[in-house]
Length: 112
Image 1: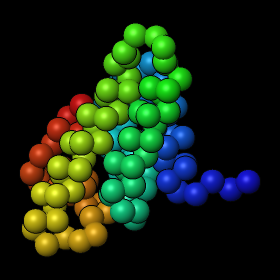
Image 2: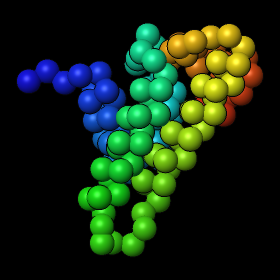
Image 3: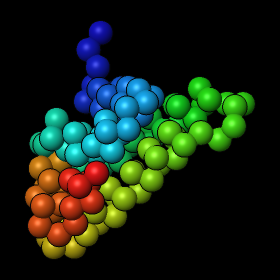
Image 4: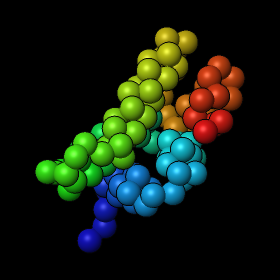
């Protein structure tokens, strides 16, 4: 069975977030924008949110874990960057647009 792009993105985010590699987690959003430069950037938010929710469900009833929280935080930050990018006239914002925005305006996801 072939996975759709959102499913591939979510699967990738789950693998990275659950992998325990701090460097991989820090670079997750950048990696997603680089892997899917032509996809709508909101798919990154969607995939991160789905991945965080999935991991949160798997970790219940254990104590609150940091990994889902990171996924939710990254999704919120990407959404803010999408809104900022849209405010300069780019719509829809794609992964490549985010990479350009980060290089020019806010290097947070490039510097992690």
